[in-house]
Structure formats: C-alpha cells, structure tokens
Length: 279
Image (tube, rainbow, N blue to C red; front, side):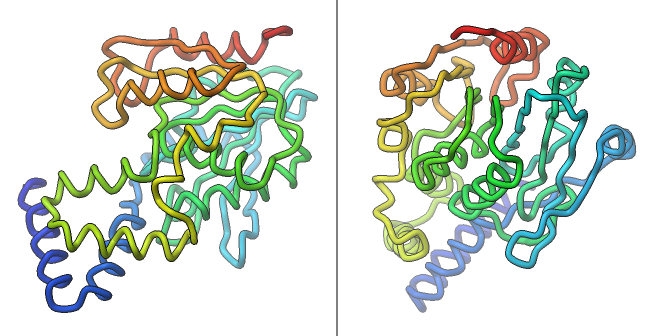
C-alpha cells in the first residue's frame, strides 16, 4: 500500500512538472515540507501533562512548549521529523531533579503545535527564538532533522549561551533530503531540478552549501555525536564527517539501534555527557 502511494505521488509530480514546471516544483516542495502529524496516544498525553505547558507565539502560530523543573541547569530537547516531545520521555525522566529545567517543544506541524508546513530554516528560526526566550541553555539534545535544524540555527544566528550539544542521527545535507525523495518517489531529473529550484528560492542559498561540513566549521562548543552504524535513514558517514569537522566533539557509535536509537545505554550516555563537569 505504501509503495503504491509513493508510486502515485511520484507519477503525479512527474506529470505535473511536464505540464507546468513551476507548479510541479511548488507541489514537490510543499509535499516535502508537509509532515503527517503523529496521533498522540493517551499514555503519551499523560506524560506530557506532567510538564508545565504553554503556547509560544511564533509569527502568529502557537507552538506548544513543555517545561519540567525550575533548576539552574537548563536543557533543551529538539525532536525530528514526524515526531514530538514525547520521544524524549526516557531522557527527561533520567534528568528529573531539582537541579534541572528541562524544556521541549513540538515543531510546527507536529504534536500539539499549530501549522501544516515544516522546513529546516523555519525550525531553526524558532529554535533561535526559544534560545533567546530562555536566555540560553546549558545543554541541547537533538535528533535527526532536529539536529540538522539546530546546526543550521547555530550557523545562521550564532546562538549565544549554549553549553553543550548532543546530536543524534543527523542528516548530512539538504541534498540528502532531495535524494531520499528522488529515490523513494522515482522522480525524473526535470522534476527534481524544479523542486530543487523552488527550495533554493525559499532559502536563498545553494542547496549544496546547506551541509554539516559548512555549518560546523566554526563550531567550538563541546559535542557528543551519536549514530548507528546501520541507520537506514541517515547514513553513518554523516557522523564520521561531522566528527572530522567539529573539533570539540566525540562520537558514540551504536550497532543495531537503527535511526531512533532507543536504548537505555544511549539515554545514560546523554545524561552522563550533560552531567560531566569537564569535557
């Protein structure tokens, strides 16, 4: 069924691009930027209700934020594509004590936040707004496209007052997103070119330059990179390249955990990295 849907979407975009290249480019770009909102289960809502919740005004849209604790050490959690703050439950529980303020948010078009579209530049700008609102963070924990969004925010906005960064399963470049959809939907070269052109008009930047290598070249804060060797969504070579170009980072490689990296060992590694006095 899923393969049929992918085949149909690819046929639609290829056909539309042949009829109207501009419309095809816009349609493809909108498709790539429209997440399917994950249905929130009762047990997930019950956990989220343990936080102090509020709606952050982001250009007229309500972004749901969550806060556990009021301690002096502030930690921000940034989820990935088609996820939401519940994915950080084990990490939050591992850090719940009087010393911490733990903050999560549902990205635009995700969880309990408003909106239908999600883009990395948009998410990065939201991250910058939240960092300013909370006057910085002692540590930031990110996953997947949330990691990529945070690197983008660091590069674009020179975020102040970030102590440490944990980046889990990060994509390596914006081109990677295009390649994934090209392969999955079997898009033709003309379709890909028009979608890429639409994306570049949106970000006002060449897509090849939106990569970890470019974004971390001046990054000096301590970092922990976590990536599974067999990650089916974001290639492990991204982690190797990231460590090579991020001077003050260390790499934790896992085996058999896939893209989501669900493991008590990963939770413990993140907690220990945050608690460590000297990196």
